[in-house]
Image (cartoon, rainbow, N blue to C red; front, side, top):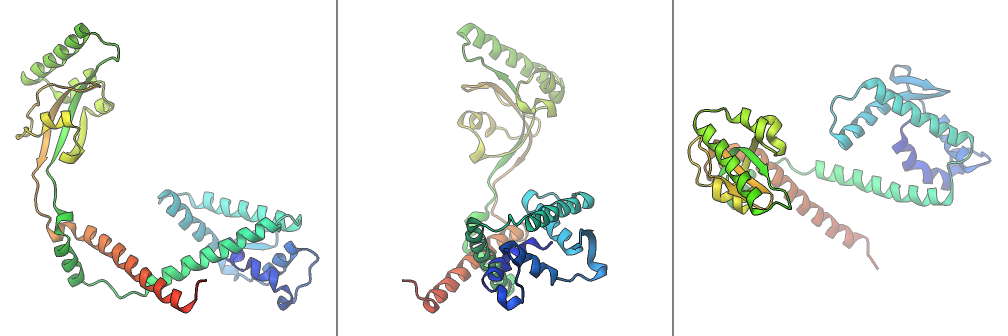
Length: 296
């Protein structure tokens, strides 16, 4: 069933049931009476649950909601249809057993009515805003250039040896020397990925020690001292120590800081501009509505 539509009209049905020509004995039956008037063309019926149709629209709507909630783009159609069917089974049971309507339900549905209508009104209002032009985007980009500067970044590999919390000075020296020996082996031609998988105690060890990209602002202070001086691909850092243990970095790739190029950051500029434009438009809308509807 189109549950969201049912909920929207639900309180209206309760308040104005006489206009519908229905005189059932319970509040749940008012909704049942309305549902009886809903027709679905045969080609739009996905499945019948009792005497009520579940439409393809209902299944598609459930699919959209799941995608919005989980980001999952590949849910099985039959599983989603089964969810809609189960929802309809519960709804019909609530109707038959007259357990749908209680005072707290009415308050909640009145709240949902306002929330959903307000959401739809907002979506329609924003949809009718003028299309964003390329010139607007370029002006916005020029105004906020600093946002789109590309900071320096390093793609790193790491071999990490953990320092136990209760380690004494002798153990600490032994761990440091172990990592220094690993560095020597790498300098002699041993494969970094293989040694990382065998020796490293970091979570990235299983992927050959690859940490991925790190911008300068993302580097802990200790790491920065070791990473920033790296210039050439394949260059090894010195062994550095922090409270967790000892680190050895391999430079896999480097990106120098650069002024943002509009063509390269256009999508980001458009997303930022759209958000700010919609905020401004909504502020104007609320200002107008506060004038129309006096708040006391």
